[in-house]
Image (cartoon, rainbow, N blue to C red; front, side, top):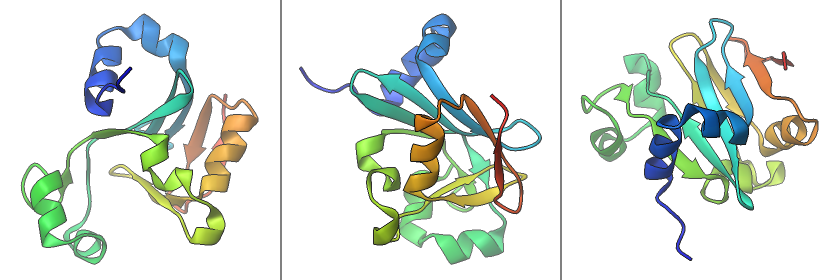
Length: 141
């Protein structure tokens, strides 16, 4: 059986809120409640979703390339498109020792998350974790 495209799969879940609520295991949100990362259990994997966001021009220039901005932003500059992907294709599939970091952001927060941070939250059964502007995290659910 082929694996559905992650973006299409997440879009279908958005169209079925009851199913999304049943499958959702963990969300990261900023203190203003913006969604930073949505983690949905699907079969034997995890579907991840990050909403659209905007970076300052300076931060954007530090963190991205011209080709990346062209392919992944709405404006070719700093308004990044939402993206959905399976955990196996993300930095969270690697280890802290490999230097893996997943950037999660919104207009209020720009933070880095190590694979061990996500694994710890997932394994402890947290359903929601808030991330402050300084990158500190605390579970609320």
